[in-house]
Structures are given as C-alpha cells and as structure tokens.
Image 1 (spheres, rainbow, N blue to C red):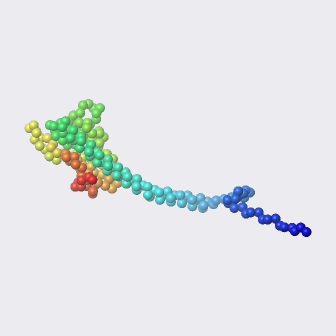
Image 2: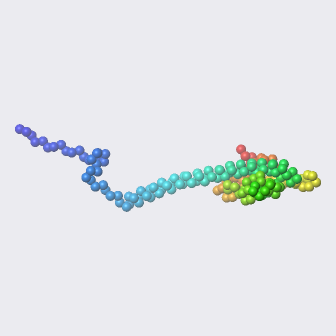
Length: 189
C-alpha cells in the first residue's frame, strides 16, 4: 500500500527571497509618507545649517581679523617708506596720502602710491575701517613735519565682521582692544 503523502508546503516568500515582488503588487505610498520624508529631510537640513552657518561666520570673522593685522603691517611699512621718501613731510597723516592711482602719473607726497588705491580711497578692507591720524609735529629744516602717527582698524560691525579693534603707531607694534574699539592696550600674541 502506498501512502498518499501530502506535498511539502512551499517556502514562504520574504523580502529577501529571490521571488519577492514577483506577481505581487507593491503597496502604494501614501501622501503622508512623502510629507513625513520631506519634513524629516528638512529638519536634517536645518540641523546641519544650525551647525555649519555659525561656524562659517566664525571663520569669516577670524579671517577678517587676520587680514586686519596684515593690513596694519602693510600700512606701517608704507608709512616708514613715506617718511624716508618725503622727509620734509614726515609721516603721512591720511591713507589717501599713502595711496593714489599708479595710472595717474608719478608718485607725490599727496598720492605716494604705496598702498592699494581702494584701501587708501575708502579706508575699508574685509570688514574693517582703517584710519591714520598724525599725533605729533616736530620742526625739521625750519618747518613742521609729522613726527608720529596713529593707525586704527575698527570692525565695521562689531561681533559680526570682527571682535577686536587694532592700533599701531610709528613703532609698528600692533596692539588690540578686545572690546573692538581703539583703546588698544593688549599686545598681539
């Protein structure tokens, strides 16, 4: 006698089985699913932006401060050159005297062409305003000359374009004001 045995059951079709998806309709995603995915992605972007934007602004501010100290050195060097080139004047009492357009002719005491023309015309560079003032006069060759100057660099927007103010003089030693003004008492590290 032969026993009738039932056929073994087919293995179930799972998501990882090679037969998954064959002959089956995939469930259609609802609009709520796509809204949730979009909102979730938006939140992820907001979190990334909340971290990245302040860091980018901090780096930009640091770059502005670094550029301000480099510009202070360049102006100090231009003042030293101006003083030796125009000894009858002493130091320049303005940025415009240190600047000037090289296309306009030979350098003069009023436009010595020692600085970038844009900086000397506007006093602005990378988030800082620069200014030169004469602080003392002396008599040389029977007339007054500028024997000292003060250079300042102040952030255009304190806390955004820079945190510190910078000052220098004819000794070319740059100091800074941690409050962002021109009361510079701290030497640069």
